[in-house]
Amino acid sequence: MPTVTRRQFAAATASAIGVYGTPLSRSQAATSPNERPVFATIGLRNQGWAITNKTFKFADFAAFADVDSKVLAANLEKAAGKQTVKPEGYADYRKVLDRKDIDAVMIATPDHWHTKVAVEAMLAGKDVYCEKPLTLTIEEGKLIERTVEKTGRVFQVGTMQRTESGQRFLKAIALIRAGRIGKVQKVTCGIGGMQSSPEIPAVAVPAELDWDFWLGPAAKVPYRALPEIRKGYGGGVPLYSNCHYAFRNWHEYSGGKLTDWGAHHVDIACWALGAEKTGPSQITPLEYELPVEYQDGNPVVHDRYNAATSFRIAVAMPEDVEMIITSAGDNGILFEGTEGRFFVNRGKLTGKPVEDLEANPLPDGAVEAVYGGPVSENHSANFIAAMRSRKQPISDVWSHNRMLEICHLSNIAMRLGRDLRWDPEARRVIDDDQANSFLAREARKGFEIQG
Image 1 (spheres, rainbow, N blue to C red):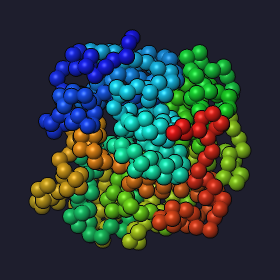
Image 2 (cartoon, rainbow, N blue to C red):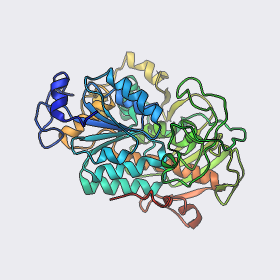
Image 3 (tube, rainbow, N blue to C red):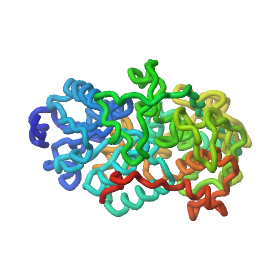
Image 4 (tube, rainbow, N blue to C red):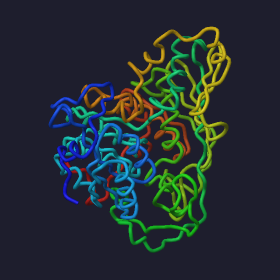
């Protein structure tokens, strides 16, 4: 299929849909104020399709990229049913970044690829929507911040709880800002645990998968998988592997539940506490279980999952607030203050302060005040509104990195088996060179970031 231009899209698709009823400016994303922005998605499994699907209403997709040819082909066919012009498919994301007609990319690769693709996309002049967790390391977050500042690109992180989930999390923050539980004393983030695995043997790489490119910046290792197939969300791939979906269970590619669900709930907790520009003073791993033996912070067994399966971590936050991150209990966030408590997750907002809203509702505009204006239709709509205004969106890089530092540090503390004292201004572990050595990771030769 030939490269799709904006004018071909404009002729083939319906009239532009504005997030707030105003067209994109010429300086932002299109050759004409009445044309829709042109997007591409890099990484198509699960969340890659989810964020793309919710964006068809606002943008036209000219290209998809994925290292798995089956995943790529399946999503190209699905996209053909969503818009008149079928996207172009690529095995190499760099061909997407070379295209001058693409205004923004949506990134849903495994976590260890996020920073390389995002930085190179910004340097190529693209705005970026990147799935959470944004980074594999703390230093990667700093690099992304510098690149946003250098390039002036708009960058949305996929922590969609800030926009979606029936505005429950926004209402929770509005309750706190209205003083409905007094001074916050404790926040508990229930994020669930990870599973362990049996020994996973090295096997032949599936014909459709470019395993070397999937590994990318990570060390070159054998592809591992067992025959049992995962069912439900993310299904259709081996239940036990070091690749599709299961990459979350390996520190080589992700950070377990701490950077999976932690990136959602710790984000809301920090936003509620007003800690978007600061961080903890100490991380204490109270209880935890690692599925393999570790030495000097590194797993010594390489044929099974290595991310923590259960944990209870205490985080000392500013204003003497205690944050607990735990694998136990309900998935969600419990806020406790001097005058009450309530619980929130994607499905419910409960507790006496919530019940009291019937007689004593929040002031008009309280939720909008948290959001910084009218709440967008979805997270993608907020991103495109930011592309118009050239202001950063609701899930900005800086606040995301601050909360994600807590998640990364929690993993480092468990891997090393000790408390960590953190300097949120220097963004370094205090008096612990070994812990600081885990703040960055060297890319495999040939997969360094290209600028």
